[in-house]
Length: 242
Image 1: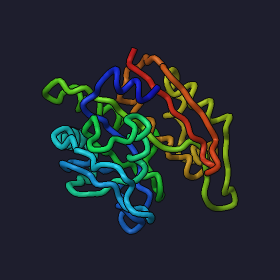
Image 2: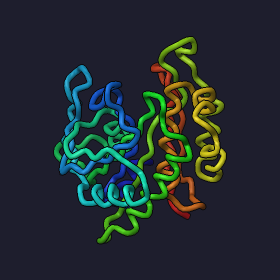
Image 3: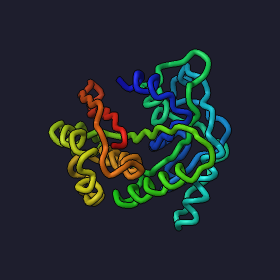
Image 4: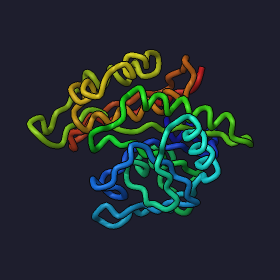
């Protein structure tokens, strides 16, 4: 379904909201929000050599426009003119575009959100960034078609006393309601996310950037949920503005 949606709608730019996993940022320097403005992004080596996929062409002009709009509204993003991207961006791009031999069908605008090292941003702040993302896209000159990919989660915890924690019931509730009832999720605090979805499941807050950029009313076209052997709830929702 995701790849067919891409073929049917033919977007020009994919905005991907994700978190770095200690590959391009580490615990000594962790920006709360970062925006890519590069002309291209290479897949980072996560320990087994770079993934065998093409480099990503950057939507640099939209990246600069978005960064400027953020600063005007009192956000303070890190601006990345040269950086590699890890599986947080690579996996959703492969889910929606397959694995092209030579070139991706869209340019990318990467947005990094810190969900690794506390203090992480609040759910409401992620939503506010989504509202700003929509304003930037609508005020950007031209007629580029844009798809927004919110990533992260679902429930999982990789360390501590609850290592291996999963919450399939909460995962399914999230997938069913992020479209029609997002207010309940942006109204939760950070501790609620960790308690409900696990310490790494707090990544779900990044979906709120995507959802905040959409209409109040949306159509949910596709949902999928699976718990693989990696002990991380894996899900997908495809939504369009109503």
